[in-house]
Amino acid sequence: MNMKNYKKTTINKINDNLVKLVADDWMLVTSGNSESYNTMTASWGGFGYLWNKQVSFIFVRPQRYTFEFLEKSQTYTLAFFDHEKYKEALTICGTKSGKDCDKIKLAGLTPLITESGKIAFNEASIIIECKIVYGDFLKPELMAQGIPDDIYPKKDYHKMYIGDILNVWIKE
Image (cartoon, rainbow, N blue to C red):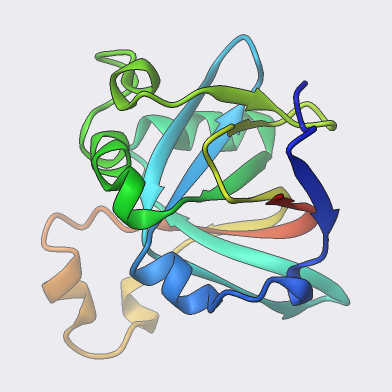
């Protein structure tokens, strides 16, 4: 555990635009434990307040390797980076599968174990730890007209996870 470069804060004290961080700068969604984990780049998700909790929400297709880890561990971290500096690493983590290669090594990232035992990366500027409180597959019959056909031609609908935000860390 090497959190010495991070200070604990809360989600409402993050000064960055959270929509921009997710949509434009991307994030790594990581799940598992120190012996076995996987990460993936994501640009769909967000933050809010639900069930008297500060929450994050993410979307993962079932064919993604990270999906298995989410289902098993029921926890995840969201890691945000300086996009320009780490764009190549984020691209690798979004295009390579952890089933086929050591994409963490390929991306040049350094795994970090948080105080609560979750996996993130030392290069991240923000780390958010979450515990899944709800998950369900998106249902095409409930989507606006056009979305299922345009976004899901293979009918491989994402599973949405809502995570209770447990800890937020900002690199000092």
